[in-house]
Image (cartoon, rainbow, N blue to C red; front, side, top):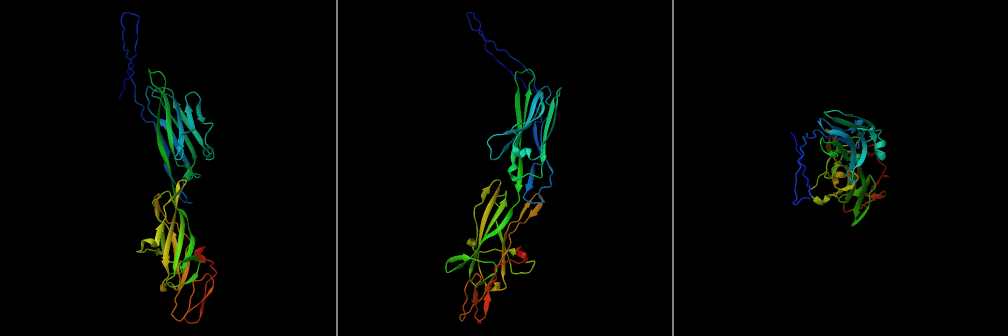
Length: 340
């Protein structure tokens, strides 16, 4: 494919009439093919020791086969998604060769950057500049748009022309840091602190709040699991309820390039919980050909039943009387092996 550029100008001569002359300049041009911003890998997963095996991140700016268009320089620049403009990183000039921008960001310098490149100064002109960095130190803050920009000379036309292409580098954050931050129970309409391993009367309403970093996907919801097996390997199953207000998901809150979410669970103790019941919060998500299931440490509570002849009090470490006249004492709240 060829392009023709027509340039017209007005010329006035000091005669009886104005003569308008249209000068036509025809330049045979070839389109600039293959100006590209290549990133390898184009995305990384962070947040797990096994999630980011990449040792180097490669950024390559290239232009191939520009025919009769002479290249002046190539440049790689970056714009984080929280920034309004691009910052120059490295470049390759026909006169000065490879260069590193004197104002290159400190976080790039900390990743042991290495710059290579070459320009072909005879037709068909072409050039490449490559920046490689330590991929093992990539964090979610490195998510950005990278731009390859080329300045070149069009044969027969005064001045220079600039073209560019941009590519996004995506950092996916794995959900992490799931914690039950609040454990409460209701007594006569008042919410009181619930110590782990507390013994509560049947019917007592307990409240657990889970705080979680749900990663890059703001649509993820926090799930709750329960188990009545209190051994070293409890068998957890998903806790579901027909009452929509028994599990409440707060809106996600953005923190840098990941989101946090709080989920609140309500549960009424039953007679089936006299041997204890465990609850934990979690999420299950498929990222980068792998399932991730971060969970919180479980919390354990016991139920005690009462009859009309006895007395029982919701406690946090205090002795309670049972209908048979015996007593049951709440534990100190220390967690066993499954809670560590």
